[in-house]
Image (cartoon, rainbow, N blue to C red):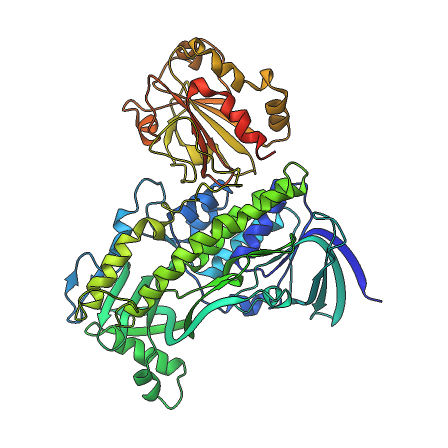
Length: 571
């Protein structure tokens, strides 16, 4: 008889999305998690795969305490360049949107090949005594709807390829992070809607020699034969070349092997010279855009990352989008499993992530066609337009989406997480909470908001205080000592307070004439923090940040009761 074990969450797939999801659940505590991967680690490490983390993804990983190790190993790419077919540098094309990635400490593309990222995430997960079980394959899964939600209603059968045995696992929630060919998606008959084009692209990584003027950049070369060629400086001194694999390229070789991939890469970057000293990895892949019909089914099964959406690598969004999924989901699931929030909160995962994935897919369809020297399918402009100019324009228009800094979650009926508050500000519900410089009392050491608010599945109340705040009696309702409900959330680790003061003083008390809530910090002399959040020094404000760093609501200081109202909608 097969062995049966139990856990709270079973994660299938140990790529970055699965690893980060497991890491968060383990880090937040109170939840048992298992993660399985059908491929042996040696096989996973052989893949070049994704390489780039954009600013918002880096910010989220920073809040999880994962960014420092990434920074120690990455290539921080701040420079981009585009060359036309004659080798002349052209401006405003290719990856030029990266020059506009501001308003963040991570004002660069963090380039680190996926196998190195995965090793960092595995090591971080190991600190919480969670190991990836591999090669272990999910062979069957079902949900018993007679068992209540948030109980062990999912049954999974796992084949351990190390010894050939099958084991049965009962869990409360199953998360499929198992890629575009997801077994979880297939077992629960979730349609994967969209198209797979006939377009194919080649990617090849290695050590090179070249006469390209700016080789250690994110570069595009506008080739008339190989499309908009990707040239990306990688970690550890390597470089990635990517080009369109057209019929002409395929027909030129009886067998398209590594030697052919290298030969075509050399042709693709002309008029520049290219020589490979070493090839680390190469692949051909088919471009397609698909979205799962459900990201959450049977109140117990989730899909994340490529398991619920696939697209081209044209804008380097794949791993970024998957990590956004993981960060959006994990804190919600943690709160539910620890009995702090109702299971209905989990429905917001699909409600928030699906519209952003749909935006990406539509944008990706245009990008992938333009990168193969074709205008978008429903192009209404000049039929003779230069595809490279159009590509540069679309990439620039979508720059804040690409960087992740402009990704937002709509205010929707029934979603308690994004609520319009009483104060109209430049920072609104559903937007990313800007990372701002803050200064510690006494030493006036500079720090950043993100560093002071790690993601521990806790909501944060930012109090942008006015001088003599005691003159606003309504602020007393913010003090947990005056509210058993707020005190309960603080005790459970679900609520944190930060007081931001408009100017420096010998102590926070000198300005407030009362004790501050939580930790206190000062704004700089120019009032940058207040201004970035659109707060008037004379009026102040209250901003609630969700655990993932998006704004929940914004209210006036005199409307302190809105804080409790907002939180009661969740807890």
